[in-house]
Image (cartoon, one colour):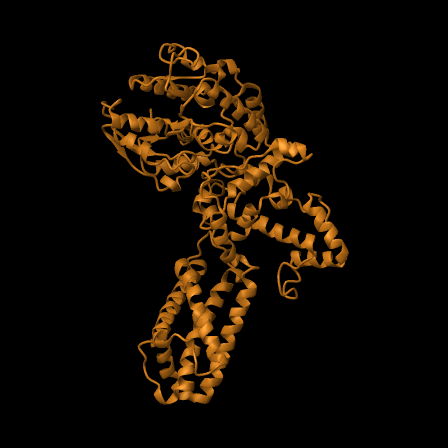
Length: 631
């Protein structure tokens, strides 16, 4: 539908030029020579296709009433405008035949619809046909001119901004990679704010995201927070920020955001612009310059705060950073980056965050783990396995550094997985070592919760250890650490180090014959795709190949699997926070898994495993349905 509307609308503009030409110089047309009749046929085919597409668009919004689509006159305006353009084109062409060719009205194979209309309306005569031709000529022209004014101001500004948005995105940047704050540079500049607390402090590309939004609702329909009753709606977040930017821009510049001003005089943006202009033209330059330099001074009092008045803190803390919104967005908007930047402002500038998040960050800072367990206990998981699991200091040589992570080191359930993977590596003849108590938290939780400074400190400490022991390959069972090491640590100096998730290596060892499952496992398994393994790193097949290699396993897919997989609810630091709105995300995901009647729910992430285990317990099915990792 959108392909037909977008490209069809572009193509019929040649027809609009032809129609304007005919009205200005009756009896002539675009100089296409012998190809002109075929141009007319092509135009009619495209016009009919657009009319069918526009009817379907109207049906989806007003009859089918998809929840994610907004309704109202603004949403339907373009439907009617495009319909008027297409119908006026056909009527003008048919009336022109009666007007200029009254003595030769017949069915034309190159104008099947226009000629059929001419035959049906032939009785009105050439004079009336000529008059009506100009009526529809003006209707078409004025509608077209209205479009030119309306598109940059309405939701359909995405027609202009979306292509630019796609072109300006860095295609080499890993999906979901967050921006980095240069604290040294900001300190030299005397900055007092970190993160983004004002709309004008977002980057240009981030602001273009706001106007590129199609308001299609695909992001919100897939968002785990929105789907479980939280206040966060990725689409509404973008739209509210866009409207705030428009209003604040009007307050700063004194320019009306919507034209004609008489029609939109009741809008906040235009009211602000009128007040700003009244403040005096001389002040415009002064205050705009002040605002550019970071001053909050405006020509008029505009005290609407981005965080609090426009976007609530509840919205920001509901995000699990799963990137389902970004993966669904047809115009490449990046919602998560906006949210994390505002979290950074709350945490590092305002010092405001949920108490659970504050506790987790304090524990990471003091003990390098979110629970606050003594950092010297990080190596306790290998008790009784010292011969199988050497530290980097104990090993004569090693191929892989096994980065265990906080979950694998301190969480009782995850410790069993850590020990199992260590045994598998020994079985496969892999030389590996661990950092032991020298290992630090990966920093993923700190960064997603908004404490960029703590993340950078942890990253530099970990990188220092990797370089100290000449690490060339790292394997981890934690997708969050995997993503951070692979895509974010290189910016801080991690170079020439290969990063692996344990499922990558398990598949490789299976193919090489280093390991081979021999015991039959009669289980009906549904696999849950981790967000940081799937959408962030495009690893979907490896876990399923591992499951397929186990004799007796039957794999069944959930309705939302692969790139559409729903988050378990642990990402973005939500693992360490309680959910106070709606239902729990992990319960919703567990229900989706249970819908396919599995005997086992599989995962490849310690966070996901914990959340799904809690879900089966809450649903009181833990005796019937077990939750297991890939090892």
